[in-house]
Length: 490
Ligand code: GLN
Image (cartoon, rainbow, N blue to C red; front, side, top):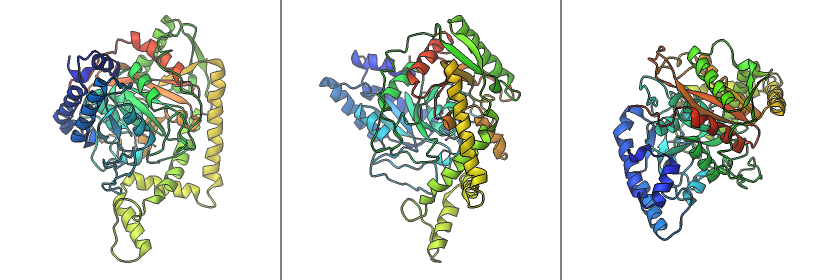
């Protein structure tokens, strides 16, 4: 078996037994990145030297008996996490080669626990997109079929884990950006509850929706990484001071007697037959495992896309006002005064989708339209959250597709933003409601337009701060899914 095929928990064991060193592992992953990234474009920055230095330090620490859960484990970061000493681009030209003076909290926690950072991953510019085609560094390709998109916006985070360029990665999810690419690339992706993981040092897109989470090979690795990054942080006023449970302790508890809800509004026309079949098969497995399947209703689902694209763009227009050529990154100044400098910098620095979102959001917030759009969207958002809280009175988790189809072809949706926005129809409600959600591989597509053989994911949505139960339910299915070990032939 190749070293790059190992899960984090397998690495932990082999490192502890002395059968493996972090330097061996890190070299194997770096070699894999260099052998495959011409095809995938998953990395914006590869940290060859820094990673090997960290790996050597991890091995030395282990020799002295100072072992942390992630000592020597190689991981990679979406390029939205600021990192001291390594550039952060957010896949935008406007940041240039921006160097942060500090590490964000999630990154600091990973480093403190001994993780080795392999590099920074490609993404949609400022995390706006569902296909990773909105990157100033070019699109990422799906390792299962390089003619297809990996999903977005954490496309590099998903593709790199699937292609065994890294053991695991961190992404961010504002409306589906961890779960949808995880589904398209056949890996596990978790969006924790709003407030569970600190966003300090994560470049803001839509602050009331953004959340940090792991993308991993399996559910156990997901539990390990979540445990490593979760927790209250005084530097992020939206992080919640509630204890972090031991996610591994309850993982194997099974699903006997658990109630799983199927929202009737989610099993609709427009979902591919392959996806329907795969998700239905998961439901049957859960039944066999002793779970009770219950129909639930989330009646405001049909307003979710409209509501999300108002809230997200409004917050984006406000967050992105800081890129003015004065404080960060690039400046374009033809010497015609301050206002011209702002507009020249922003015209040259932002890509077309980011500009579209800033304009939509600015419009929705403008006086005269604020009540009709932004305020109305906030009210609808409260109803969507209440739908979920009501449903969770009846069930322990909710099961849905992640996306209406498997990965689509590169370029298929770039000319139609609305079609692209509809890719998130099943994921973005969880962000509006602030609950947790996980994407789990459950099958491969048949011979569709893209040629078939592409991963399909199932989504499990859980109660606020119910990650432990969500992981437990996911783990039970994973054991009987027949998926384990499936990797693209890249
Ligand atoms: N595709 C959605 C958007 O473009 C979600 C993005 C995300 O979760 N960052 O807004």
